[in-house]
Image 1: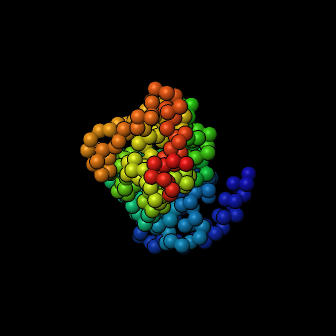
Image 2: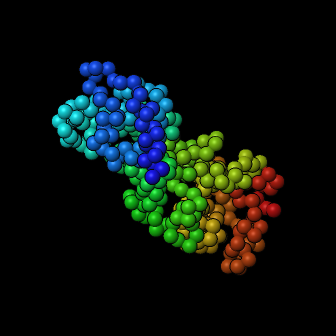
Image 3: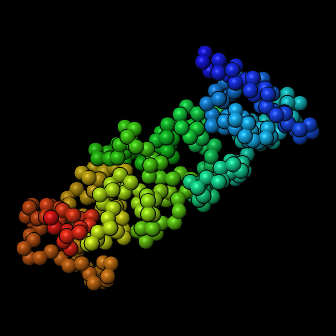
Length: 307
């Protein structure tokens, strides 16, 4: 009821909008509304509606024809997708991307979209966004964000069902908090080998530091595996069967992946020394390295990351 009332009240302002120039092929959005009332009914909720209501753009760049092109031929033919200059269901992925970027290319978040993994796999705007009938309140998504991502990323769905995981399914956070589906800038950690489309935090850092700011540093004594290789060296970012999202069930087995005494290993190529003779790794009290080395993400007081 309120939607109809709003539509009636806003109809007066829409009827007074500037008419397209004769011979331009544009007929105005009011003509589209007469045949497509089901689409127009909820269009006032759409961000694209604002350009009509505020009258900031000329008629040929607003409303239906702003995306679909001049509608004169479509009206004269009494309908039909083939008479629409830009019928998105008939367009190729590259054409859809070009049509959307005609307006959205100025957004900094989409600056890498043409080289993103989604674009290279022919996943374009209309694959994730529902312009006319979006069921969610933000971003015109075709469905709830995590469910939409799970549609292609089934292994990630399984990871978020593990005993220890980030709370995406619970609604505490969502995929776009860490990932930019429109593509990300060049990597700055793990020597350029990292998951694709991972959004950086401030200072071109890993997105983990948006929430785990106490791990940011800079520290006087840095742990190279954290600073150079990044969080994923020790943790699974989505979910794990191990506490703290660790890659291995026991803490010392994670540490021994690097602290193995191998020569010509480590950041300076000097090798990483084995544990001293006092460390009996068969003794359970020595198997929890973080009991003593509590500042493993970096320390300002001790080079061995002791308390």
